[in-house]
Length: 346
Image: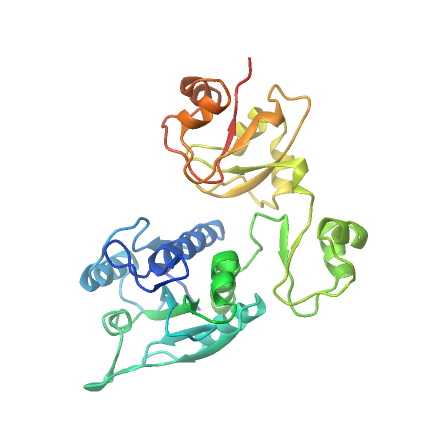
């Protein structure tokens, strides 16, 4: 089946927060899920677009017009509208358009379940005063696209949805990406952050160790496992990341530049991160081996946290903003959570 493009629609935004409970705003997590998906589809070579990439307000008309303008109004365009639910329930569910069948919705829920979330149902919803039309405008006003509304869990759940939304949203987003790729008969590969593996049905520690060229003993040590039992959806760390720098790719980065900067080589970076080519995506996380031979003192690698500014970091380490910007080749003082910075030393 052809796939002209995927449009990812982070629900709500701006003045419309969506559902809010337990320190979760629907609009924020819808955007986090959507941006993760966007990067993954790009990594997999699929044409993909976002209706919003920041916290802005979109009217229904603006949202639908964006969707139509990206790849047109044809059936080989998939629209994924990401949301969180409210009402005290628990689990994921999907609403699909009256014009479509349930195959993709069913497949997505199966993958989300494999990733550890319980699932409720996939269904269609009709407009009460005109039952031949869809209830939601995202279905109704995109008359040919295959459009889905995906609800990943309940922000006011009395069970485990709240912690799962906060901790596991990337796993559920990845499940959707995998389902879409397989539904369209396209090649799916695991995320380039190959240091983590999500257990699927049929896995054993021996099969995972064999797949990643390690040992059962090492997997158990790294993950503090007391036995060989695994659960579907469980995340395992493959390598001890204390040996590596977690680096968030910035605009203009290349593997060659990073290899030179951290005294390693491109082949090592590609192998460590399970990369098939040298392409990088902004905000992609890659692992870089720490090296004592480098001109960079790896004890002075700082990972940006929420609320950090260059001024605060410079003051804490007794250096200057200009020196940090110079050694890290920064053209702006804007920082991103998870970004790695080299801290200059005297």
